[in-house]
Every structure is written in structure tokens, then in C-alpha cells.
Length: 384
Image (cartoon, rainbow, N blue to C red; front, side):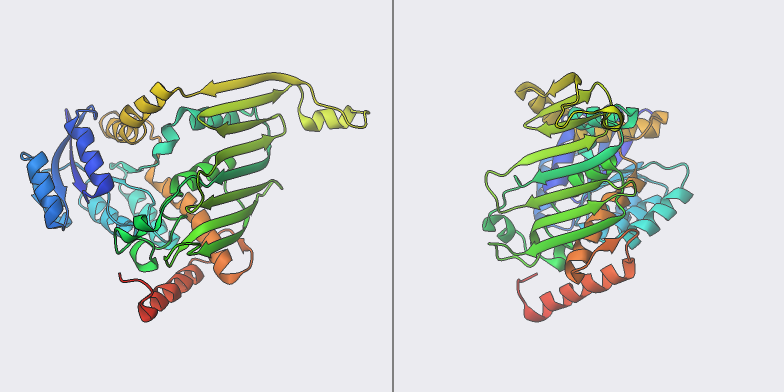
């Protein structure tokens, strides 16, 4: 197949950017042949900017048009699983935006359905996995050079969102519109990376504060504590009301420590593992010898190139290559359940005010989410 014909469903903020990547000929092996949206304004935008691309109002009609081989789904979160299953059932390769959905049971069903479609490629837009710093960190973890993990901490509070951000769309800042706040909107990439690098935890204690200094119905200030099967621990902190905020990831291992902050990764590699050193050391307050300090940076030019030519673009390129040549996937669609499980667990722990063990009680989560949606509707806390 010379060109994979793409149809994009949802051409709002993210979907329109994906359209422009095709217009700029950034997707080798791919061509945009159809778009779909229910908004008259988006139709006008599409017809003006993509006069040769077929516009649809009904996504199923687009899927059955014979004009597309693959779809990229960039609609509100709740719709991702439903639309992905519709695409896969029609023999279309499927790439979904993050998050995979709002609750894990729907994604579990989607993953099982996708497994049956062995000839189709299923992916998720976890574009941060293309960032060279996180990829280098992944190599250090997988190679064993960091050693067994002891601790993973991430403070990411540089998502500043003023009230005007939440006021621009009725679905923002609501349970019924997006199924959550910072965890489901801003942090899916980081929660994916948190488990991609640190593995899945066994227990989570979450504190998700709703509407801190903002007139919204969902969480915008989160602190979560993690415990892992090997005894390691972790902390994840995020907010959307701090400024200028911080973005710092630390992973401590038996053989060293890595830190990612300000577009720089620093890996302090120990000459001997802490476990081995401790077994023979006789000094009262010693320091373990450092073998080497590795530093990897992304320059401002590199940041710009990554923004334009990497990340989202690289995921679509990789997805296209997986269809054409069977190349390994950077972000397989089935991985979408992992970060969402962490997100759901933090919410559930906060709602119940108790620790949550994994796997989570999916039914309980859905019941608690439904309570908040119903309360939102009854109290009319915000028009949706």
C-alpha cells in the first residue's frame, strides 16, 4: 500500500493540528482523505483549508465510505472506546488520542476487541514516549543500569490554566463533559510515562482536590502516593493553578539516580550498587563512589524541531509504518489502560478516602463517577 488513507474524526484543537501535519506533508506514507465533525464552524474551516478532502458529519458514514484505510480519533474522551470499536469492526486501522477513555472497563473491552483484529494496527497518541529524554530514561531502566527502583517522584505543576480556559467550552471542568480534570485532561501522558518507567503500582492513596481557586466541578490539585510490589514507593503531584510551577521527575535506583528537569536528564551512576556497598561498608556516614554522571540535553532548537517534526508527528509516522511494514509500535493502543488505571485509582481513593489496591474495583469507580455526574446535573453547578 503506497499511501495509507487517513480519516480524522473530530477536527477541533488537536484534530485540526493533525490535519495540518498532513497538509505540511510531514506524514511519510500517509494522506488525509476525509475528516468528520458535527460543528458547522469546523466544516467551514475544513472546506476552506482542505477543499479536496471529503467532509462528513457522521463518523460511521465516513468509516463506510471506502475513502479511508485508517482513522485518527480526536473527539471528547468518553467517545474514544465506542468510536475505536466501530472503526476496528469495519476493518480500519485505529489511532486514538489520549486518554483512551474515562473508565477502565470500557478500555478493557476495547483491548479485548482489538486483540481479535489481528490484521489491524491499534495505537494511542502517547507522543511523550518519543521525547528523547524519556526514551533515554527508559533505556536506563530496561537495561538494568539504574538498578532496582527504590523511589519514583514526579512533581508537575506547570499546567497553569486560568478561569478563562475552563470558561471557553461548556464541557471543560465538568464530570459529564470530560470525566475529570487534571488527571484525565492534562496528565495522561505523565501518568503513562510514570508507569512506563516505574511499572504499575500495587497500592495508591490519592488526594484529588476539586475546584481549588477555580469555578469548576473537577480536580485541579492532586497528590498521590504509590506503593510497588518490590517495596518501592512513589509520589505524583500535579495542579493547574500554580504559576510558574515545576516539572521534575526523579527515579532512584539501587545503582544510581536519574533526574529530568528543564529539558535535561542527569543520570548519576554509582560505581557499586547501594546494596553491595552497604553489605561491606564499615564507615559511619560514607558516600558511595560515583562511576560517572551522564547528562543529556535538548537544545532550544531541538525543542522546536521536536515540537514540529517529532512527538505527535512521530507517533503518526510510526503508526503508518506499523501498517505498511509491520514496524514495532511506540505506543500500542492496549497500553492506554495502564495510565488510565492509575488515574481511576487516584480518583477512587480520593472519593472513598481510603487506599486502593490494583486491580481497581471498576464497578465501584463507575458508580462513584456516576454520583458526581448526577450531582452536577441536579445542582446545575455549571452549564453543560
